[in-house]
Image 1 (cartoon, rainbow, N blue to C red):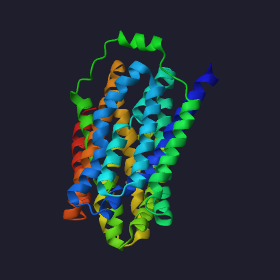
Image 2: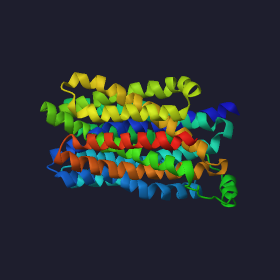
Image 3: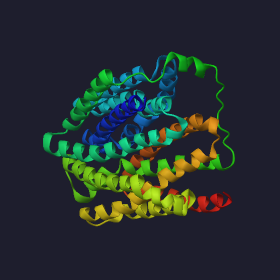
Length: 388
């Protein structure tokens, strides 16, 4: 019994891990590629936000479909759609085709939420947190490896290479899931769920405040995220491929540090200091890192500047997620998780739009906005969370 339960967990971990490598290959290059095809500030902003906007609208639809037909077919459809989107991205001859690729990818971006539902199906409540932790681990490791791979590919093999490599990885992932991934959601479970009444969480008090905080934390980081490569390109006068490579190396270093914090350090710090204190420390690190980021004088110093950013995110994200979970009742965990994911997708759509638009006005502006939001959230959390 235990062996059968571990096997699907390993397969779903591998599925998400491989998919996030493909995602990480492409994401730092979006602004660079848009500029390469002559996109103006507004077009860059739309290109940066379209994926998450489509995900915001379509992820709930895919969730409902998975409740009716099962998790496996939705995961397979999602992987197939993602493969096609990366292929279009790699072969895109113009800005318009880049936009089509990102929009198409967002429509089929159901992997993470469906994988979480898959884990919920096959784990007991006592093991649920451990199972969900696999998603976070797969996300962190995959996104750490993806950006440098994309940067090296664009610099050494040409601008089409990252998209084609991502499509190949995702296509391999589709075949792996097709032959190895069993269905987790039996007809009996579907019938049982259809008889349950599901209520939406009440967004009052601390839960509402924490969800709003989560939205703005995600918005602040997303405001900067897709401007990193453009910042390096403009500051150090780099070609498109070289800018992608240097961005990927910085993101790899930051991702490794963040993974160390979330994978090990956070376990020792939470029992000693608690999630509320770590949330405040994480916001402080974020604000500091975001404000200084555009003023670092040399590229190699960005590896040092990435440390407070990685520490901030590594402390902030798991602490905030734990506080949100604890503020929701036991029978509203799923709906609260779905709502937070929806807010995250909306923030990841609005953040790049704001960041890429303001970057064209003043390259430092996205970082000022992100840092200011973090400072405001810090002040509000210091006041609000004293009550808890």
